[in-house]
Image (cartoon, rainbow over all chains, first blue to last red; front, side):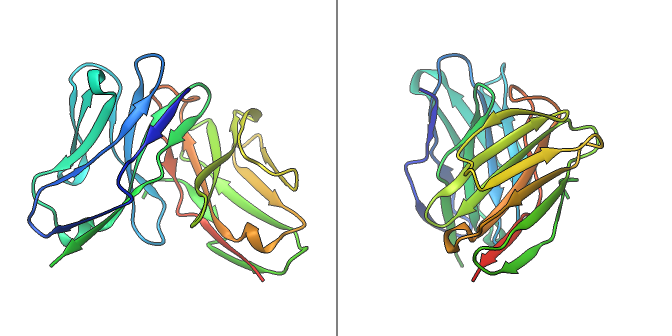
Length: 111
Length: 114
């Protein structure tokens, strides 16, 4: 079965601290993976995507993600979080005929 | 700006009514997807169209229908509305049909059913 799991519903970090949001997937072949961010009242914005090749992908706003096939993971990272990063983050997988989204991780940033 | 336009931004209507949500995809994108986002259900895939034809169906109720027109814009029709239909409805577009075509989302239509 194809699925995406984001184990953390909420995460709170202090501004300037590092961030890692977890994403695990289940898929029978090499997946296409994405991270999206949603600010309150807004649509989802694409942060980065993994198709193939280099397992460390760079995205917008200083985010990066690492694809680990052995762990079926695609975790999102940022070295230093800014208050404006407070939002909800969605991991997604491109499966057969549809995209599968995780349930999201809501990030709170403490000043 | 994703290039995907959704109208209206907000819609308030009564139970039993019918509404139409409109979406214009990003220039060059042939696929349109509709999603429903609510607090208790998360982001739910409703339906996908590719170049005017229905390609995939998700958790779309029979009271809901959609279509994609020759100019590639799409409409989502919601009828016999219930309180539980209150949600954010997103349209997204992509060049192809899944695979390595990322989705680009509009800012959504917030539907409130009273």
